[in-house]
Amino acid sequence: MEMEQYVLSVKDLNLWIGEDQILKDISIAFHKNKVTAIMGPSGCGKTTLVRCFNRLSELISNLRITGEIHLFKQNILAFDPILVRRKIGMVFQRPNPFPNMSIYENVISGYRLNGIKMAKSDFDDLVEENLKKVALWDEVKDGLHRKGTFLSGGQQQRLCIARAMALRPRVLLLDEPTSALDPRATSKIEDLIEELKSSVTIIMVTHNTGQASRVSDYTAFLYLGELVEYGKTKKMFTSPDDPRTEEYLTGKFG
Image 1 (tube, rainbow, N blue to C red):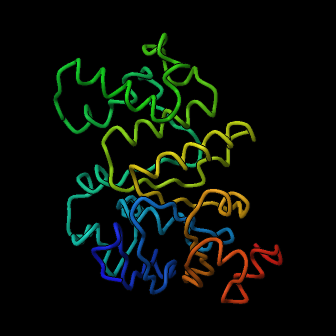
Image 2 (image 1 turned 120 degrees about the vertical axis):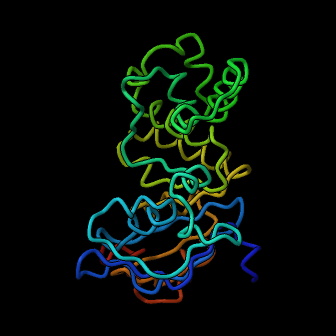
């Protein structure tokens, strides 16, 4: 397929930290308005890979990267990282609402931190719209000016997703977004992912093969910094092409 049919496209990506090569010749392209799960055992490079997509990896000292990452046709490695992060949002493993900000302030924090001015009524609409997107509005609408840290873990993670979505990104990165949550909160986040993909392309790191099979349209399997296999989730989970993928999915290692 042509590059422009994908939202995010990676070509020959290599990454070193000091002398250690973490990612090796990764080439992969992500389909628009689909969920792609990135799986693999601990230390295989999953989180490092997705942090490349919004340039967070560059915060690591002694890092060297080669290759290309295109958002549509633009190589994001040639852009200001701040501009990249407006287009490619990220939600981390543990819920991290800004502790000194209210729920309301958390949602619009991307605008304030980037110096983007809007009328208060527009901010009000933005807050309501994005809290509704993550099914949190009805739970918090009477306490918008309370600190986000008063919320439960699952609510905090949905608030973080609302904060990321408020800037209207083209891609949303989720780094094991439910690993710190209980089963009920996990189920809510999984339902939310299914709903959000109509408006954003989602790339999700997960160590949970069951979760990948439930929520993703495509799956990528990484092992020792290499992309072993990538394709439709249903096909990969029923008849993987590479024996290492099958061994991982059947719990023989990982």
